[in-house]
Length: 213
Image (cartoon, rainbow, N blue to C red):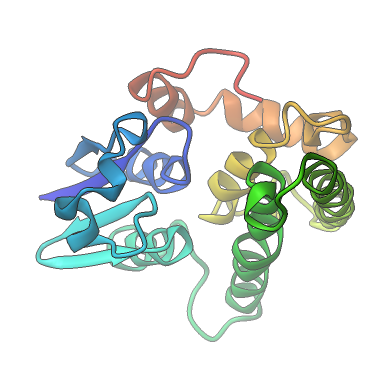
């Protein structure tokens, strides 16, 4: 049995949507961050970083959202959510997956947790403002790539693990001054994915109501 450890709206959204897309049997295990359960010994044994999500799959313990998404698709999707190994399309999937997790998501974390880099209120506000500006530039880059992709998705015509991941991160910009939904192509992309059954089921199961983004 697959188990996905989650907290509503956290980085578990992308693998949760992928599990729903593939129709796999799995169990959701709530890690209540409000109760500091992510810092409890039982969870730290699974994920020593105390971050969410974690995945259990037939004895395998896996952390890091991008790794979880790639593992699930490689093992269970029969190539439907990832291009074939060694193809240019697979290389582009690696490129954008690394960009989403290492660049955009990292900057979003700075935006949401500026106190990790500053202590006084003025410095915290400055860190947050600079992070928001950098996020906007990254979203613009993704907007341009989506416009050039030749299809509705980040890889063009093929729906892949990139798309739930991009949807999740774009959702995190929803309260910014220049959210992802305001871009022409990303706005269409977000509306398209919001109608996908796997997305609706995931948000319903996590207790997240519309508007999603």
